Image 1: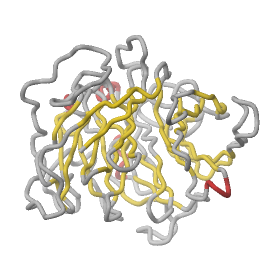
Image 2: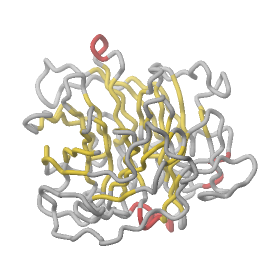
Image 3: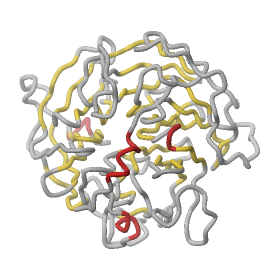
Length: 386
């Protein structure tokens, strides 16, 4: 998960605040939602709502707490039966969570994980052919780099011993104390996508020879996927600072959330070969050769990590902002101002995962070294959204 360390950038990982109008069933604090949640300045609103656009205003209900007492949870992936796999960034372990009872079963450790700073065991993804191959993919930091490996998950073995040896599919992603990216996901095309960070060495985002500050697209074996901008490269887009959110909408368009530095966090619609500007541009610069974000937020209001698509909207978890953002979409742009929920109720929010229909899973991030954990942290919450 080699880099020049930018200590000042450490501020970006601080936590999220809860948004207005969210009935929190079992919040960790009694913080009242702000009476007038501020919409992100500069959010794209030019697209006229279409008949298929979701309502301008949505809702979030915390239906239940599925699990608690998790340590530095980061990645979250669903198995075909609905149960969840969650990674511990700092402990280098993967735990299975029963989606009904919340029972936690450790399935094993990932060998070679070297946690430190923002690095460790991060994103998880389940093979699109899991029924036949039983493979789980993980993005993690080692002593020398960030890499992606796949591991056989054998449920017949004793708890804690169910993971096979890592089979590395991609190595050599630069690592740093900060900005290791870490999100992985299989797209509708059954290709594996990964968001990387520029490790605090800003020039790497524009360096065509580096995998840092990029979105990558590869086959399940880690080879450049057909249709990539360069046939011999896994690089899909460039000019990113630190991508930790990837999601596809109902039209199979790829969206990505990205940390800004001091001014603007971003939600981007990702185009193959697109250059998203960092470090030349932060937020909407309107400069030729760079793709502007479709929405942007002040960094105190967001510092986004995971995103998911449900009910016609992108749902974006905020760390420093301590809130869950809803971004209703009309095609390729927001149809209304983004709306915050859960402001400050659960602290830092790390990962959000669509579970079908109106259900989302939300992972808090209070035990990542930047939060203020309370009894029960960290948690997986089940949300009902509209």
